[in-house]
Length: 149
Image 1 (cartoon, rainbow, N blue to C red):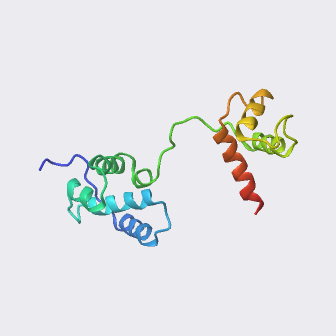
Image 2: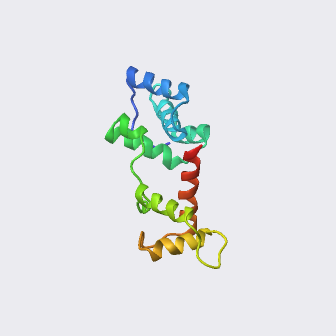
Image 3: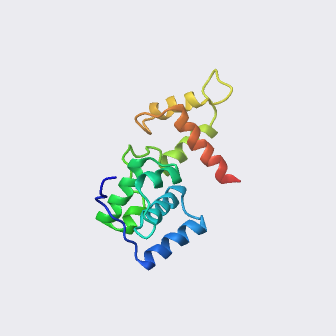
């Protein structure tokens, strides 16, 4: 077994906080798993990364990364997720309102009702957004409908 580069030494307050998060079960599962990793990685427990990985059914790299983040950045950063990259949503509240208004209007000639694809085409045609899928339209209408009840 090789020597660990990132040794976790939890203080009493940190250990108590982690145990409270795990026992409450109110936080996200990923955060609870990170707490469990740190509790098992604490030198008081003396568990190896392999033992922690097997016990919690997580990847070895996850255990290593949580140890590393705790040692370099602290407890708060080790527990909480960093923002993920990705394209921001094009369908904000104003756009959603316009989509809903179009969906409530009379459908085009030759159609008995609006389809998701027709709505997507009309929204692009009216230059409300540059592009949108029928699934995006579905998600907007689903949220709008669930807010009514």
